Length: 210
Image (tube, rainbow, N blue to C red; front, side, top):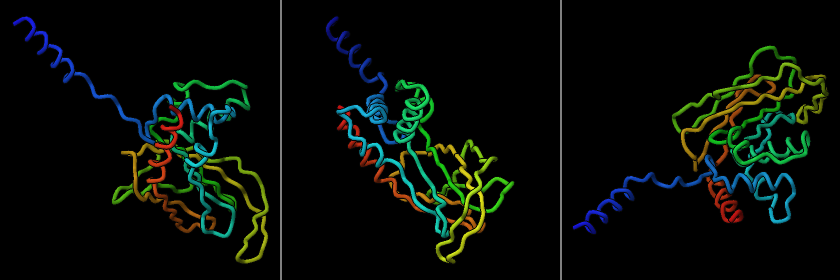
């Protein structure tokens, strides 16, 4: 009787225990974060290409060098570690990079355009859902540069803006996601990235970090 009660207690504890969280590209494991940190510091056992492949980057179709860069958590962690290495010479901990990067996308939009005082529009579309950044940092002190319009074969003085957006996805996407912003001419530009590659790359890093 006592043995039966003990067995029932063990079973109840097992079924009552929370499930072990499974890592994803949106919420990588601590081990994967450490892999991204080690990549920034050139550790011998780490393949830097694995982490660099996580960043999406593509030019806007406006004839300039304007572009969108999308960094999921592991790519964000790698960038944060690189910054720490340059500024402090020490590696951040996995907890430190998780606080900055976990569960969100770091989106950088580089614009080459005429002077702009307003906030440049940006949004993400996934299916029928529109997702706005929960925080944005707009460049108020752009560099003065020469804009080369390849299609028109002309040059003009302009400004280089770098806007940063922090976006919280509703899930670890594995399909097409559209990033919508305005180009140098003020017209809407849409770039589509397929996040299935993020699923595949996260699995590669999970295997490599073991």
